[in-house]
Amino acid sequence: MSNKNSLINTEKIISITPSEFTDAAISLFNYQHTHNIVYRQFCDALKVNAAEISTLTQIPFLPITFFKSHRIQTGEWSNEELLFQSSGTTGEITSKHFVKDAAVYERSLQHGFTLQYGAPSDYAILALLPSYLERKNASLVYMAQQLMKAGGHPDNGFYINEWDVLKDKLQQLIAGQQKVILLGVTFALLDFAERYPMPLQNVIVMETGGMKGRREEWTRAQVHNYLKKQWELQAIHSEYGMTELLSQAYAKADGIYTPTNTMQVMIRDVNDPLDVSTTGSGCINIIDLANIHSCAFIATEDIGKVYPNGTFEIMGRMDHSALRGCSLMAV
Image 1 (cartoon, one colour):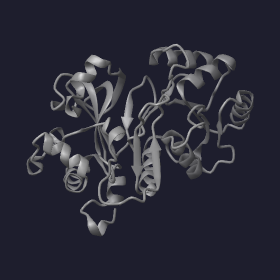
Image 2: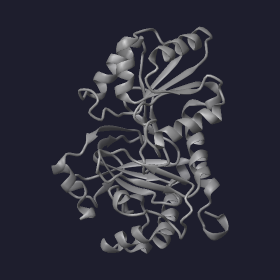
Image 3: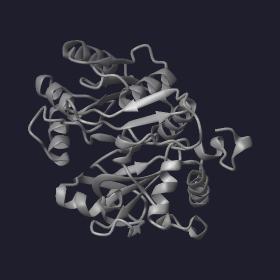
Image 4: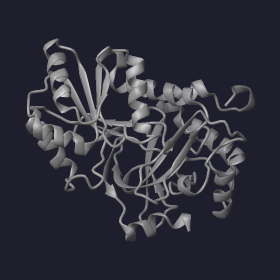
């Protein structure tokens, strides 16, 4: 999006501060209400008067399922630089996120990561992402690629099932006192930890979720406790992101996520999707200011809790009864 054609300043959004977030979000709402046809029609169906929106809790949040049924974009363009697509079983309709400007995502990712962990160049990044590497357009793979590219460490790399090679690489990096991030989907980390218990000093183990029926479902606490035991770690980190988002949140322990600066998490009531709060428990709504060219205001299908300091945790996914309550707006 050109700064000449909009009041929304891309560079300003990427480096947004907490004190500036509300004004930026309301400005982006007005921009997207004007230039995003699907979002405007959704707001019109709710009889929303854009001129009356003055707080974050008044902004309508688009149900995430719209990314399965519509092309969600702000402005008139057809030359997206990236396409992120969710996983799904055979025949299932998947979400598609058309990303007009890859640079917006890349700058947002790197800025947000650096705020939480420091420069990517401080780390060797090893990504254990089977199933994701085996399909096209996975946003998680692209995220890892961009962090590796920004970091530039010669030992950065992806792994599918080369566990013995990964074990040797980890031990080599630990021996050299190199800081390491082992980023992995949950089922793969559990499989690897079962096969290779070992002390992982200097290693940040970051799980991204994802059992997908590959193992018996475990709670987050069970997963973290097992990984800590197998690898003699004090804490397991977590990353929260999705196909429909360009911003991430990171948890350094116990599944308590801190959003990056372009992201704020809110709560909508399970029985009244228009009742939105900045704290409490219920269905998760997300403001993602990096979604300049799609939709920045998304009602997810996750259930969680938001704390007064803005951190949050995810309790699980909505079942069918909760889905009816949380997604009435999509009907």
